[in-house]
Image (cartoon, rainbow, N blue to C red; front, side, top):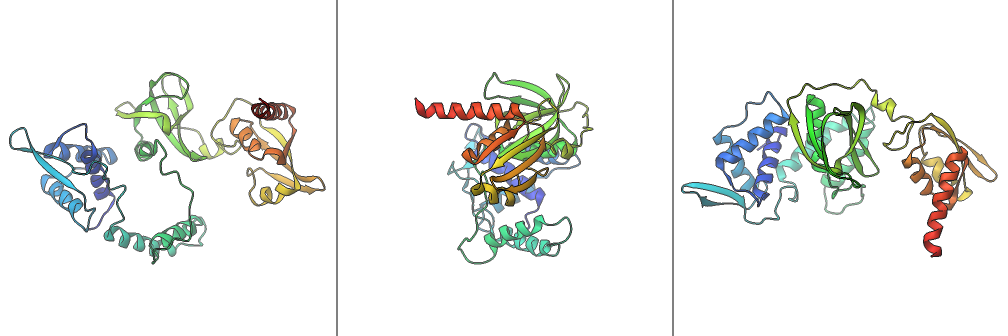
Length: 333
């Protein structure tokens, strides 16, 4: 059986239901949940019928599928409840099926046709990842950085779909420092930084078009029927003169840094920002940046420890010095 996007969404929805130990799902409940997921993904979807649902459950149980431990029990007379006999089971944790592996290999062959073409530089990295996973043999020879345990990753797809389909969302949000609250949100742009995901958009209540929400602080998303207000912001340009995701009120300033000779080569091979201009000097590497200062820039500078000194502006140098002194104080006590 071919596993296309539509089928995968059905399997993921059923997996979520079977894993939910806090609710009983009979067959009609499963059909409703699957069709709701399909409709949310594509408003034009006509859903599936009972025959297709039974076929999906058989496939998930089969060795060709996920070998899922789906069990049933009598519930309220003649109805049957569906659940996993092993509660910790999930198709997310299952090895890739033979069907999926074949499809990935086919996708790899297709992607290789575009490798090296203008705008397709990313294909080379994906090819390496797929070959490492499916290229034959069990020995892995390369590792990619990825935060698989990241809280909030389950909201990436719903938010992406809401942006593409222009849907308004009710977001229940729990900040680290403060009480949880709910806002009406028009999502416009997803961005990842330093292992975390953020979504930007319009906070309807206060009229801020660049409201920033960290996905790991979202507790619940609910689609609304309100009219969607699109963004007029060029998001690539919006992030072009900052480090990270926090844009504070302030002007673009020239930042000058001096790196130690020991750290110079590292900064040359991995620039801090696209605006970087540098010059090798006897005392080290002189770096000039044009940015709007923000907390992420300060964290980046502090990550170099004693190998960097802020020359300009004086306000940034003072903040970095104060934070460095605070760090020293932790050890003096």
